[in-house]
Every structure is written in structure tokens, then in C-alpha cells.
Image (cartoon, rainbow, N blue to C red; front, side, top):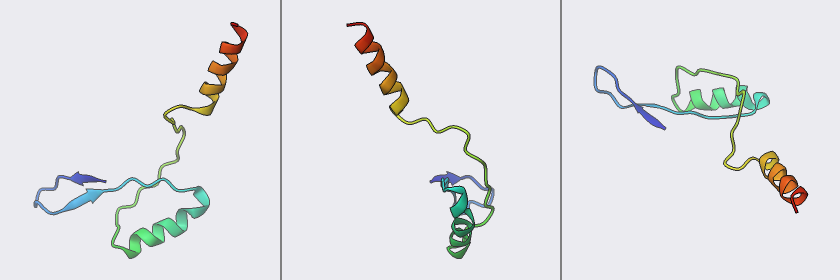
Length: 67
């Protein structure tokens, strides 16, 4: 949730939400029910986790081959 600076000094906020594609229509409906407007949908191409499982597996594999 981030504040949006507007000319009239109103209280506007931007909210980012990630939902599965099959839940998208319901998420849009629920956001509109609570007053949401200007809904923008963008596909998620990459999600970077703090420690990706594949990276951990690679490190473990490299560690076991150097012993």
C-alpha cells in the first residue's frame, strides 16, 4: 500500500495485489465492492523469492560434488 500524491490533496492510495488468474474476476469484483477503482491487471512474468528452492538445491549439489 502506497500513498498517491494528487493535486487536490485527497487521500488516495495504490495497492498491489497478486492473485491467480482463475481468481482474477472475483478479486476485481471484491475490490470494486470496497470502493476500488482504476484496476490495472498485469501478468506476472517472474517471482523472485528470498532463497529460491532451485538455488538452494544447486548449492547443495555443488557442495556434495566438491567433497
